[in-house]
Length: 103
Image (cartoon, rainbow, N blue to C red; front, side, top):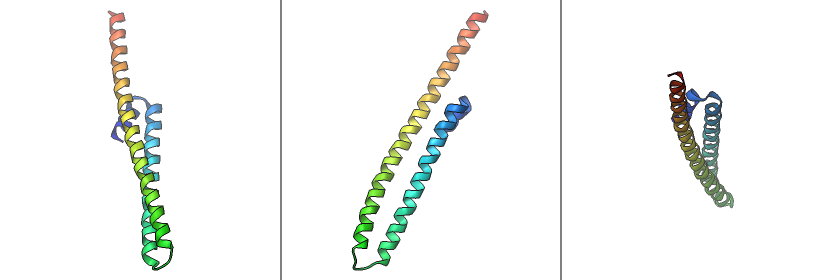
């Protein structure tokens, strides 16, 4: 997320979009983790019926979804880092061109 914040300093529009995307992913992860804890708590409260098996299956599905979201978050952070580096290089090239034209 730090890279997205750096990008926001260099390009407010792109940085804000990347930061918002990372924040949405974090929010989704938190919601899924809360739901898993709720399912685990409910399954502990029910003994001898089919609910624990259903809850366990739902918890596994949510864990898989969390893993996928974490992978997307890492990919987004990598993209933000690459964008930040590319913008820095472009800014350097523009400054160099402007200095050459001024000379």
